[in-house]
Image: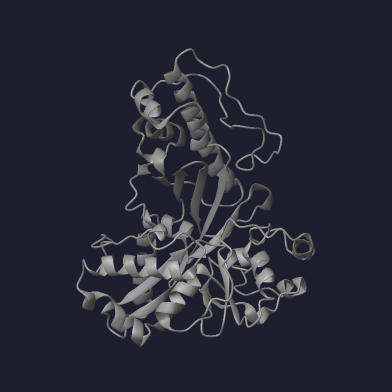
Length: 405
């Protein structure tokens, strides 16, 4: 039977409901319990056979062998501001690695290895899945990427040891969607689930969001029209281009490559409020071009699809009409999107065959029509914009892999 991928139940919880510190793993777990119980309330629990977890990549914490947190986690956007430690990474890290920078998982792992009693350094998704499985120490290839994992060779590379990191602290790594463990007996009782429910390796929130849209073949692209303009494209081969900030995740037997422009919604919101964008958009005829060549940025500098730290914004001449000014920015961003997917193809990715859209800008019909005119490929509706739906797809894939479905 071909799965329909329809969402039959869902639950949600905000960390702030349980406390003021989003770095507290106890709060993470309370939110997981609330969201999972809400979702399970909408289904026959006997029909649940697998669970997968997605979470923010680059969020790490040190734990005991039994999974007890030993220090305040460092979140995905926390920086390790230790020059000597970062220098040890820079001295040996390959250019194509995903572990560059002060926010990388590798920098955080090096920080945590001095914590007394640390048996493992885990990613956020690893720890949550470990709670469900009752066994800690396994990660997935996507979360591990920013900690230095090599997705091509499928191993923790030897150069990591040269940074001074104790390699025994790193979790074993399996493919997203790979069966890990059956659910721990106490967790099965707590959630009213069968004790044969499988815990399946998850992924990052970004990869899960991509899968949630329904994109599943090489050439399928997803554009996130949020504060920045982020492009992702499924490929049949890995693409790494450090200068452009492009790296690849291995997922479902394919590769997910992507890059992010400094253009996007933050430029629009600098000039117009949300209500103004809605009002002005209604006056736009997307079929007629303004003839302007805008590259909307708030300050000089671009990384993708152009790599130039001094790249200058183009937002002039400003039309007399605010609606035309907004339209010209929409056109400029659509051109950046087209150039971005073309850049990925130039780097070796599959040619673009379709685009699904997520983020606040995806609801703007005029912008979508301008993008359609520019991209010249089908703009398909996203099946879901919830990352959890992508994790559920991985859980389903894990069942299919072992023949339980």
